[in-house]
Length: 205
Image (cartoon, rainbow, N blue to C red; front, side, top):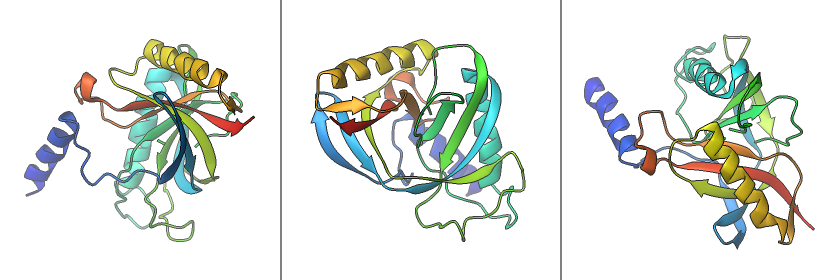
């Protein structure tokens, strides 16, 4: 049964089926072509900071946070995986949420986030055993979000972020931070079935 489950879950993801994967709740306030204006509630996240390139940081941070939800916590409890995974570059003025925010290239310090299932509170969420993993409360935020598929290379993400900013540039919304990106699928997912999103926190003009 364990082997069947381990084979079935990746297969579903490869086919673009994310059955049973919890995502943060949001309300769509408006649409601007392909862009959605979403309001997210406050939520809990586990995060860690990694040094290196954007790609290295994403995978290293993912592994560290995956250890936490698979039992590297004081309760030795398993925590359900949610989507998306979030990443942002430190030193950038972003009122961040998870899902990942990134720049096109270069080394730096990156913060990777896993959003926690909604059933947990700050009091009930297991405490990490790795001091490099932090539990944070992400405040309620409003984002302009643009979805895209394919491999999320730094170049493709930067291009979609530029398209997002152009779209909201002439609208009733204005960006209040730097754009970021959210990734919903593991590396083995077929590129054209991947769900990626670029987002920027916004407010009405």
